[in-house]
Amino acid sequence: MDKNILDRIEVLQGDITRLDVDAIVNAANRSLLGGGGVDGAIHRAAGPDLLTECRTIGGCPTGEARITRGYNLIARHVIHTVGPVYSGKQSDSPLLSQCYTNSLQLAIDQDISTIAFPAISCGVYGYPIKAACKIAVDSTCNILKDNRSIKRVIFVLFSTEDYNIYRDYLPTSQKKRTDKKV
Ligand code: ADP
Image (cartoon, rainbow, N blue to C red; front, side, top):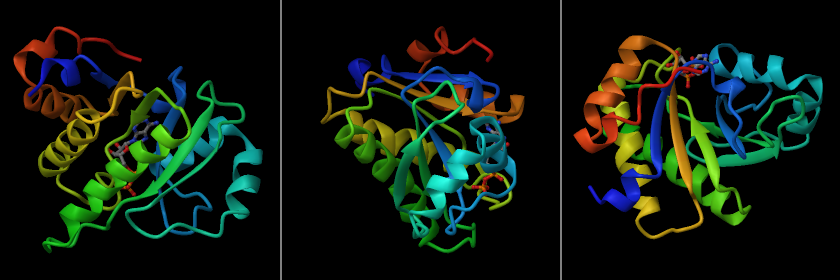
């Protein structure tokens, strides 16, 4: 992988709601009206105005992304994307990939230069973390290779196991930069 791309990618273990970035990505459901997991954590940290804005959007199809303000979050924006419920079919992987590419494209369109992703679909939606990690990193690198405006992409993993899987997938040159906790 190109060093220029990898220099813009970080892996952290912790709570995505605490990050100081232009946008955090929410693993939302199609209603965009809140849920459990990272979605619940983001709505709790952002406060009720986030739900009020989400109600005006009218939902989001699987694989697409929508942007709102961040309200009480440190992050200025939330990009809501809807991952696939894992089915084991071939259609899962392109849909998960689209979550990353559409979120990054939205960030590029909105002049967002720092963005953090959780492990979309890897909680209640049941996507196996190793396969999802490869899709997340490869889809992101594919966008970054043709783009200069995104300066920093952070993958935030809640559990040590998931964090180690991302660390192991990224090349050795990257590992010295992935030892932080948030
Ligand atoms: P999905 O419905 O897309 O599977 P979940 O919210 O259930 O979404 O889980 C997605 C991932 O987010 C899981 O790996 C879960 O451990 C992780 N997660 C949950 N809360 C947080 C948080 N506050 N910060 C970062 N990651 C989180």
